[in-house]
Image 1 (cartoon, rainbow, N blue to C red):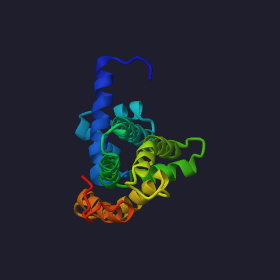
Image 2 (image 1 turned 90 degrees about the horizontal axis):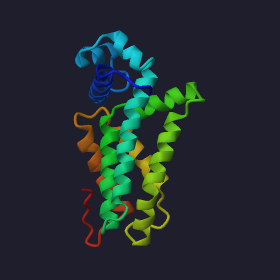
Image 3 (image 1 turned 60 degrees about the vertical axis):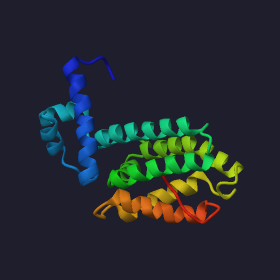
Length: 195
């Protein structure tokens, strides 16, 4: 992005924060006009920063993916490989469950605009970031050796889609993840802890 005036940078940052909240509440079809109103800017300002809904969704999604990748890297050397993997999976599940419709919208947009493979890039980033956590957990015997990061991301996607319209999608998604973890990585006494 070229150098911007301070007010333009503030508007951009504010728009991203408001867009993330609105998308979490209303899904990927959140009103751009509502985002502008809540951010305290005009529709033209939204369009200047984000010429399309796809551009706005991409910017929001990119920030979330970066956060998830940073967390995975920070957990790579944790003392407890199982706890590190489950902590990261909980965070991914939380984002996936509360950012209603965002992953589906990105997939839909990529299908219609095959030159813009944003969803695939995000999947590749999450796969690359999470794979070391899964490998280490498998090496430590904390997960079955045939469990892959792709399996876990598909599981989380399914859980997020199944719970996105529940009254408390994050809580329900985490409960379902805990049930799945019991099959993926049971603890020695049969108790399941995902947090």
